[in-house]
Length: 402
Image 1: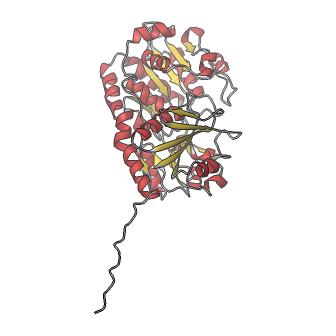
Image 2: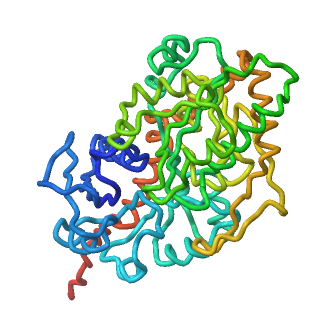
Image 3: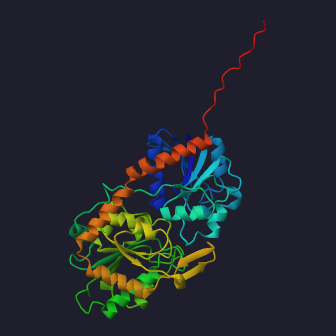
């Protein structure tokens, strides 16, 4: 079977790109042909381990070339590794091949924007069991295939060595945030993280001064340049001392850090703080837990499933905000609950059982396991739909007259 895979450039460091390229290479090894349309790649045709890479033009999501590539490459099916709402409805309504979108469900229940966008797909592909159930409830017949990570790489390492490389104090309590600062209000709740951190520091929830050297490590864009919040101003406004926060060098962040650095961030942290207002998978949570680091996540959307070691920030009906873009509800994180979760993480920072639980759960998301147990079967099912087996009819026997 020949696939057109539509997603970010394989040469960028986005979560989609890393997932898509790994999937493409494994699909080729499984006997399929993959044409990788890297919509944000601008260059000549390239081949990466048997995967043909085509670039984009003016549209960052490939709306202007999906049809052309599907026809010129004579593919059998189209798989998109991107939020479906980035594609124009007119493009989706007239797909030249059967379309199988990877679907992030980051509202609860599933937002009307998503259901409208994917109404003409053949089968959506759910990233979590929770989103699978929501898609079924909305009338779809989804497949299930989660993201996968390299658990031989994202694994427990020496915390002191990682802190030394990042310039963090060896004995302090370190909470890390890893996520994009690209929306207002912040989908990743960056402002709430800063507020909760300041409250925890100032109000001394532990009745002890021993955590005054604690550090909030921010792996994000501190500016508003990508449409997010002014993180630096937020830190100053809430009185967070320069001694109590640190961020990835902004030039390095813009250009993309190595995965070794990402592993160091997860390893150096006592907890990953990820109280997202809604998430389709929240890959950083899984990566952190694979490194043995528990997570503070929201008890909402994918994080119900992908945060298994750590603490959930509770959400009830009074904590939901209508999102006019997605036409669905997202969580409004309560700062008091987040501060309490940070305090719990501080109290349990030496709890080895949390680390063991984190690592053991991450084994289910190993890339090879995910492909062999889920994607291999999904591709077989797609192949049966787009390339049904030929039915060979027996020749009709002619009656011979006497």
